[in-house]
Image 1 (cartoon, rainbow, N blue to C red):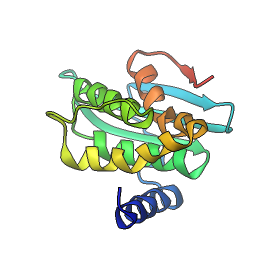
Image 2: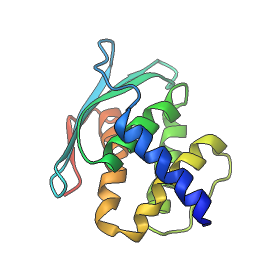
Image 3: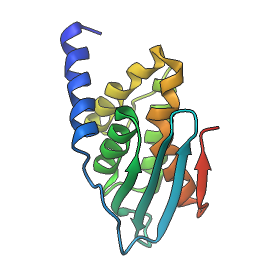
Length: 153
């Protein structure tokens, strides 16, 4: 990855970390879960509203954590509005593989979403930070399964 691209990705993460999008409760949420990364202290509550066709109508979060954790949650909420839960699962798989250094297939995925995930995938060089980048996504999986809590422990 070029230095310019790395700088752009770092700026994206810093912006979302300092100015998170969709950072509020969601009164009409029909799925909710609490995510905790005890190693770093990150805690988020994720709120998701999914319609009867499996489309994420709205998604938000609240909580506190490191810049990577907050940025990941913020970017995730922007990426997933209007996507199906199946598309969300594919993006989680892509994120997880990208962050852990495994081959990740972009076929059929939204280009904007994969670009944002690439910004987060730099954590693979810092294994301790992988849990920070994936916390919101694990919390999403728990929420959609109607599990109330998830931990990266």
